[in-house]
Length: 168
Image 1: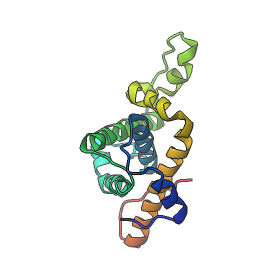
Image 2: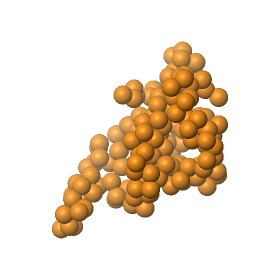
Image 3: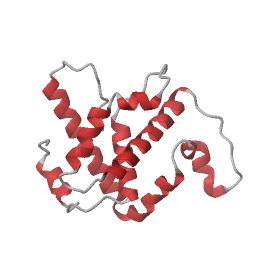
Image 4: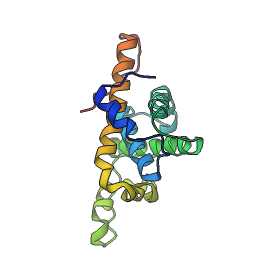
């Protein structure tokens, strides 16, 4: 287990060992996906790229399991969403898709971002169930990833060839 800062530890204890719902799982997957580096432009298989960061991903997931219940099915869901979000980031960065507007003013942001071409809309919409605390949860999950990343960097003392971007 990682030694989290007292503030983060207090926040994590508020999870009270309850199972994360779908919206919370999406926010966790987003925080993790945002914490791994952008794949290189010549990446042929995003799933293989995210597998190369599986140790970091698992460290985040299993560190959280001390504070919340994350079952096997939830872990599979997290891996899938992380792959989808990473593929979206990769394509937006290196091969932006052609925007096709559907003519509905309610979908303009979706059409421009192209996010729902890569990520299951049901996963994204599940955040509505936790909308009142979504900002707090996402920030907390990002802080977990940041502290684990810092811990990994410190413990490897520059020996690792894996570099993680700084999370701001």
